[in-house]
Amino acid sequence: MNFIHVKPGLTIRPTPKLSLMSAVGFQWRETTADAVYVQPNIPVRGTAGKPGRWTGMYVQLRAEWAITPNLAGRSRPSPSRSAGLSGAREVMTRTILASS
Image (cartoon, rainbow, N blue to C red):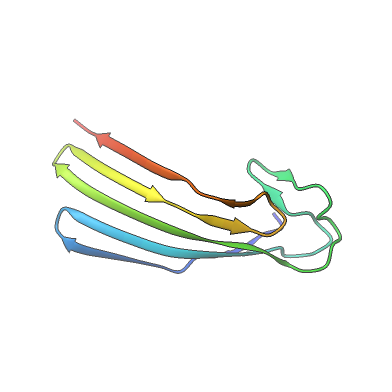
């Protein structure tokens, strides 16, 4: 795959039931001869052979709360901006996870 991805992150646990994570992802093309791709492996038109390996960056934030031993909640706002793609997009995901 024509992709270099570096994502340093930090997770803290202010309480035993709460964890907070933040990370910044940086993305480059390994070679400019290939295109920039979006999931699931679809090339972005007009990016193959264009100069510049940088494709974009994003910020990831996540909070997880253990409500009970068998129930957890998660919230992940993930604003991102990627060059050559459709511009800025923001996603807010809230999930309740249950286990038996």
